Image (cartoon, rainbow over all chains, first blue to last red; front, side):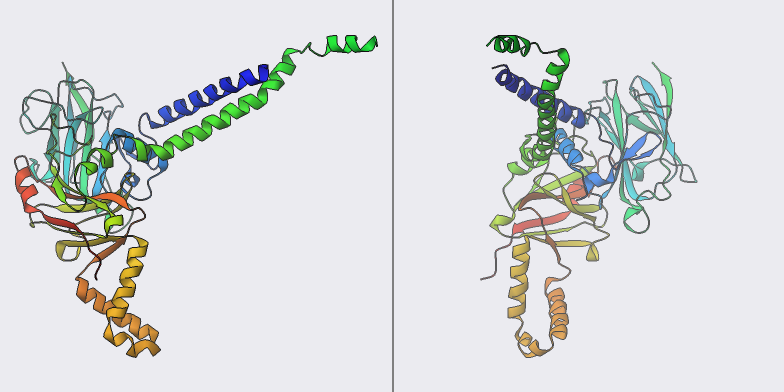
Length: 192
Length: 228
């Protein structure tokens, strides 16, 4: 009798264990095949047939449509150079040199990946419309309030995520996808 | 006769160690059950979750018909992490109804790229217009069986094939060349799954350029009817 009573207990334990493991595995970014460049991470396998089952499940549950690896590379930053989470109550200076891509865009999302309303009605910047120094270097200010020069407007939600998409990154031709890549720095400025 | 009651009194007295040992098979069963359930959930989720791009976006549009997705903004509930500078057109395919023909080209100003995705979200092909011959995509998505049938059809359609039957290698070479001429840079893609969708991405170069990028990219998709 007591043996029979153990069966449902074991079943419930198995169920709880399986669901908890699945939930934990899909929470956050799985680390397989990720390449980190300071605060930026890229997972080019998301956009190829080499995607692992965990990343595939996470992408499906998230409802994302990752960039195909032949289209470009996406770099996600959730923290600044110092490792502190991005917070829209602060200004951030995103600065760097030309990237090995035909074209790139920089977009601000909330942590769930949604665009957030902002007074400017703009959600990103492109490499084609960027003001640059003579040597090609650029500096972007991400802030809630308007800034002179390259301004990336931020929404009112405090935590945010930056995504830089390098379209036609030099990947396809020679070497690995990240050869000679220097990603822009993300430095925190003043906070309100 | 006196020994039996004595034994019966002794056996039910289990120590805590005995009880723990009795539990081990149950603990192992729960552990293995949990791991099996976890792996099953990971493998099945892409096929069942209502959030998956295929279910949320592709199933809204008919097979073999191109539809422009709404422009990403805080108001539209498109896929998460959408690039606000990318105009996306979607074409759903179901190879059970026949192969899918996808053509796309840019206007020269706005970069265009194409990706093919299975229903579970796996990207099976992606490329940009600079990698496509003359900047034009001409893709035929087929199953392995459909590819075999096309090969058989093109071989029997070649009248010289019978004459050259003795020399198989040269016949094969000839066949490949004529096929290239006929299909004009066609890329035949064998899909491991029957259902999925194609995305054509046109990039706007700057703010206010979105509509021009969306209008500049010329794309068409259709279910290819098998030759009679």
